[in-house]
Length: 254
Image (tube, rainbow, N blue to C red; front, top):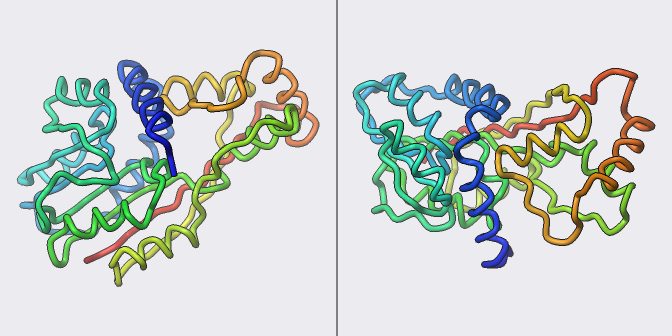
């Protein structure tokens, strides 16, 4: 389980990244568009929730797509909520583990690259299930276990003390959905390689989006230099580092 200290550290990191998040979140936006395209709902008058909305980019896109619908969002980070409100998003502070909503409130719950951070996917998906109306839909994109694996491998080889919380795999997401009450759902996975200007660039990107929390090993210049040498030896073909991103897509119905 994630401790209160770790949760507060995560909340602060994402909050501090809020002002520059959208500029750096090009990968998140690209995946978010794919997620929007997976929504199969013809009704335009819906009550929609964006769970872990960040700065509200996806909520704004949902308002354009479903122009007659009511769109709400929540996030755990105060900075993200402030940025979303500036853009006109109806936003509140909340946690994916505990929804502050009445049961059967929403026709659609959508979430883009948030549920890889939760400590208990089963409990988190139960909150989604309970908040959906009968026949409601849940659509989510979740970073899977192969995401950034070249970076993590290189860091662990450079410093044996380096350890990291593994991201969920497709089977774990499937099991958590089944245990949380969903009967009708589909889970798929897509891999892509994204070029970066070296491992320092990857770390800068992680910091810019707020996903750079470490609890034991300080990822400084010396460690990164060693990690980059490991990367060049094992993964580089002489060009820019190609970093793997695995996206698990969830399409579920209550």
